[in-house]
Length: 202
Length: 255
Image 1 (tube, rainbow over the protein chains, first blue to last red):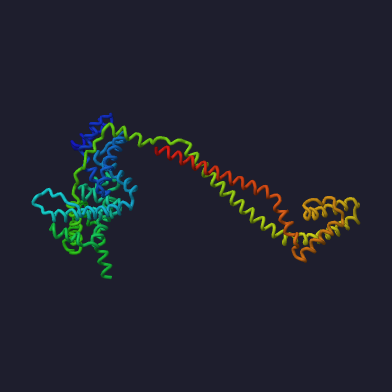
Image 2: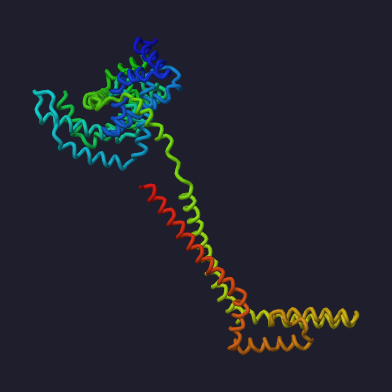
């Protein structure tokens, strides 16, 4: 059963196929936040995520003719996931070391506090914890990381994640299980992260 | 045993914990799991831990605002074309690379040939001074044997055929000793020659023996070594020229 939004997506795709760039840009406006966030969480680097997101939309526009229908959001996310995979392959491990250095640099950087009631110390702790969690996410194998990002961070159901990743629901379930087990194992070596979270949030 | 039973009891539930936390467990399994949880503190703790992890991820790694718009522009679509089809590089830097590579390979090959020829010369010089004499010495009895055989032939057959057979045997020995100048030798000459060679080998290599050996091996190779030298020089020159051409092409591309 298709929703009104999906129907609207399909008509925009149809117009884009006829060369209507404005129609395609309407899709970009609608999904750029999802695409950028998926790329950012997979890559762990803002500039690389920006490039990957832009390249994903370009790639999607060029491959419009091959779009055979289905959910447009899932199709765009699939392209972004593949684009990020290519980017990861290019960067490999040396960039992970670079992102570690970058993380240590940014931890000391000033934090913009949007809520006036929140103290700067609290903002610093939140930022540090978020950065560390992002790095822990990068420790996971890429296939498990993608499944966890879609399910835990982007609130996808297993079936939706399976559609994006072109896997069976059982495989997604297995990757989520293994990904979380590995994350728990990593966190057991750094108990202050989870303990701190539980202390603050519960 | 108790540990193994505990493991078996919980292992079947453990793989469903995350699906249960995500509310993705189908109904018969979900109800079974829920009833197990009611009486199992260990699985209850695991579920609490998995839930905390999921909550931590979703609350800490929040959605980031986009740094800029990712809208496509006609310029982007136009700019993308040259990236897909890079400008073709001229053919001659590649040709210079190939020629240079071949010249270096040729030089290396010629060097190996040259070195092996030099070592062969030394080996031939030594073997002609020592082993070569022994060969001639060992061939001498064969001459005698052939002479005996020829004597039999003389007895049995016509003298002309026996004379030609003897002459053939002598010619072999003579050519081995004199470099192919013994076609007109008489019957005494080979015997004298073999006598000479055996005399040399028993008395050790005389002062003339090594130089004679060197002449035999070295004379035909002298022109070959010269040729090798010229070829080596030529290959170095070609390699240098190709290298300079390639560097010039790179400089032009950078400009």
